[in-house]
Structures are given as C-alpha cells and as structure tokens.
Image (cartoon, rainbow, N blue to C red; front, side, top):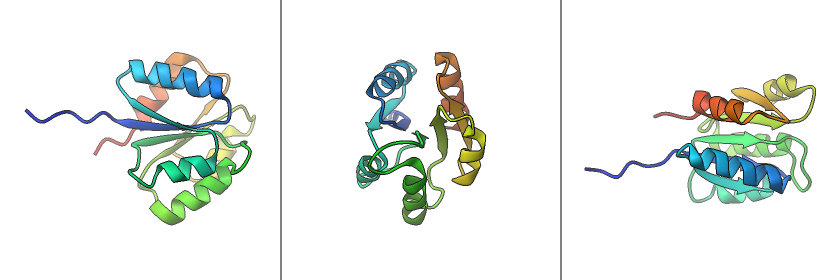
Length: 124
C-alpha cells in the first residue's frame, strides 16, 4: 500500500505566535506545516517543492505579501493557491489585488482557520 502524502501548508507571517498556533492547529488536523517569517524566506523555502496552500500575511518586514505574490506568480504562476491572512480591514481587497483564492482575517477563530484551509487546499 503506498504511503499517503500529507498536504502541505506554508504559513508566512512575521508574528511567531501566529506561526506557532497555526502550526499546532493545522498539524493536529493532519497537515504538514512549513513556516516563514517574511516573503523572502518563503520564496527560499519553495526551491525544494511547492506547498498545497499558502497562508500569506500582507504586512511584513523584508518582503511583504504583495512583493512575495508578484515574485511567486512570475516563478510558479497559479500552481499553488494563496489565502491572504491579515488583520487589515481591506483583507478582501488585498486578496483580490494579488489573485488570492480567499482571505482570513486576524484575529481568527481556530475552527475558521481549519475551514478555510480545508476549502482551499490543492487537491490534485
């Protein structure tokens, strides 16, 4: 019987508490979770393989979500869905600006986090 590959979620956020919480919650749901503290670190992590979903904060130091999304789209097109993960009141607008499949506002409910990931995770 072939080994089942876990679906991977890349969480990009400069708040280490959010990275930890998302890692625990999504890990408990059976996802493999990778984290990055800014867009540059996230792009570096993609050199080995693409995740099935990216949760992307928009306002980060070094490389923000807009710059990450531009670079990601040039390199990988729409190979991986992106969900904007932000405290901004303009979360929906920001998600549309970068071609994201959805958005999740902060602070977030843990059940909503899981529901958003389950809804948007790449399934092929």
